[in-house]
Image (tube, rainbow, N blue to C red; front, side, top):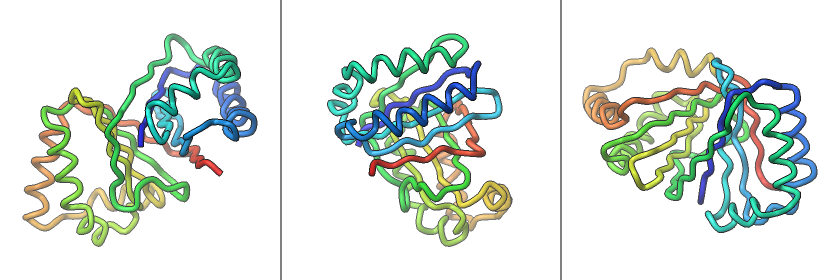
Length: 201
């Protein structure tokens, strides 16, 4: 799997939503290798989207379609300033992976001194965390190969997620989670309160 993260400060939210609906309706059916998208608005007005493809090659072929270029130019007008694109070539699911049934998604972006170790720790504690916090459906963990990472965690609801954050974990799990948090480095959090979740038909 390959993930491209698109983000930018929104100036026309209604226009952006129209563009997203148009892409799903008109461009998605012919997007080769497209798997799905997790997108939404964060509290600071930043739009974040994780577009999933079977491979980087499939994503590139989609970008080269004339209709995709025309659509991108239309979408760019909905942003104030530049839109950034980040490519993540190493992607693995966590627990049940992403889910279109999620009511809340938290996206974390950062740079780690050892992103693989950080994600290995997440895998090791995954099943036990899910037992204690069943509101966590799963997630996607992605690495760019240079320390940059993006993680998306999918929850049944935001209320359950906030309640779960206050739960105490067993001592052995806390130790592993502390190491994981140290490896996360400086993190940018994007809470998608009303995520737009799309999967290829």
